[in-house]
Image (cartoon, rainbow, N blue to C red; front, top):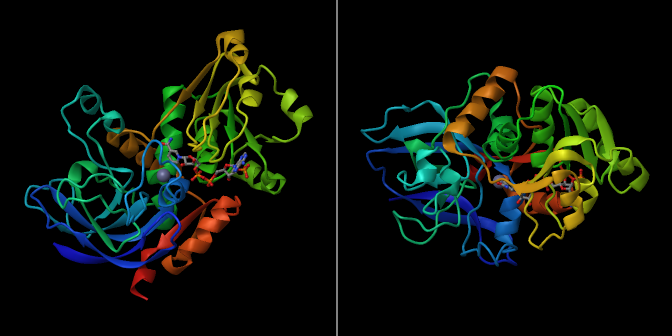
Length: 351
Ligand code: NAP
Ligand code: ZN
């Protein structure tokens, strides 16, 4: 075992502060990564504050962070894909059983024995797993991703969660040229959704509660922007969308969006507000519309997404911060005040 510098929270009401954690010795199949950048996902905030306690209660202390990019420092003797010095990335998953039908289908995110990067039982050290707000991490090579060499590293970190979480449902629901696609909530996930829908050739409409984000939405690839609090603007899009991605982090009314879908249209929730949402049966019945959800994506699809980003030169728009600003960043995230993802420069842990 080795010690690593990290930032952790001791309770739902505590700020994140400097801490020392243990990392395991490498198994034959493990890769040790020095973390260069870690994105701040809204899920980090939900977890640190135990907002999802009804479904995924938080075990303290918690070290969040699942948008990890870094450099390989050591590999176990059986590792084939990586060598010291390589760039590498880790997302929300660090293990799964590998033998269930979901794992065999490449959907490790549905495995009932999956291990999340943080706040999951740690099979090696006991306790729970610790995430990317840390100087290094040790991960089985099956869960370590390759980083295209042309991409900016800070902007690549958010691809590991915000990227795959928006790419996967767009591929599943066949977002292509000629489709009309809505993205609700221009945050970390939403802005990646806009970039992917645009790159896939769709006509993209952003729904935002922040009128000040209008110009950015157009720059990111949207053709139209609707301020969702304006009912008249919303009505103009009635019965017209093939697909809508809802990436809102807080409680909101989804019925307004169901009515914007055309027959057989789908709205997929990726945002995970703690409180239950309500929907009108009639909005679904009329036009055989569907409402679904989506959780990150499997490992092979995450690599496919990174390679797609490499080919299309897509990264997240990031504001780079030192780890010492993380609590302030959480407060700003809650006010939708980030353009459009915070990325922590892990070098700052040494300060
Ligand atoms: P974020 O950066 O905070 O973005 C959320 C956006 O939602 C905000 O920028 C804002 O956009 C909108 N919003 C916030 N409060 C709102 C309200 N009261 N009413 C309407 N809109 C509101 O968060 P994120 O990191 O993108 O994450 C979004 C959600 O996805 C979180 O719940 C997170 O836990 C979840 N998530 C799910 C998965 C998955 O696998 N399904 C993966 C990662 C994250 P505007 O300013 O444009 O309105
Ligand atoms: Zn996330």
